[in-house]
Length: 280
Image (tube, rainbow, N blue to C red; front, top):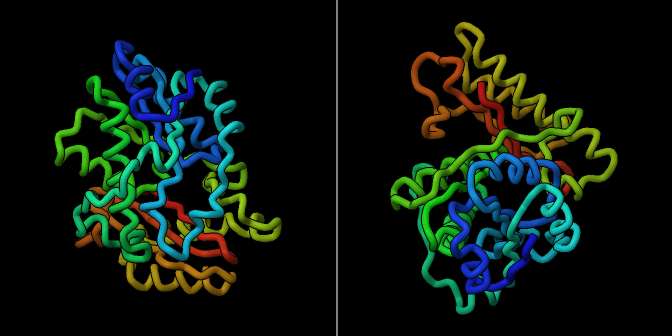
């Protein structure tokens, strides 16, 4: 596996190698990231991953400075998973001057749920992904794989790629879970032992909400309120626990139809904020 740090070196490494298959990450890789790499590899001629902790998507009080940076271990994992090129730029490499041009996503999709509780988050995500796409796909079209755990992010980036007619096919990767059902996340490492044992409750809350929502005559607002209250009684601080339409993440209207819905949650357990979702 070749490791490059500058945009010029990345483009040189990809020149003449055909269709890239790309997985962008912020590092501190776990099995979920590596599953995306393995999924992406047969979709292109050269498998590319990036590691970059993007300051633009962190709020001032969030964990940018403490976010785990484990480049050597990550590189070893990527090489074993079949990655061909790792792009690991510094801030100066990717943002050689202040990034004053930023991409503003559709507020109807980006200012709800995660965007409501983390204002500006999707502006930072879209800006860095657009720049990474410009670096990786400068030589022609390709594929990028994003995990479904960040469900709203996946939808925002799909909309971005479509509206800008980017030469990038966005492919979704399924959520990878631990044996007890907890969605794998780099931030799981912040959990203490007791918190880690309790963390599976977020997945269970989504399952209970989905089951209740599909009951004949269900009052969705009441079901959501009860699910939030149950999490709070278990010691969580939830931001949201809600059912939305998969197509646009808006609240469902009319009768709820199985196969069209997704339950989404974000909640803090101790000092760790976890997200998860469940299509149903």
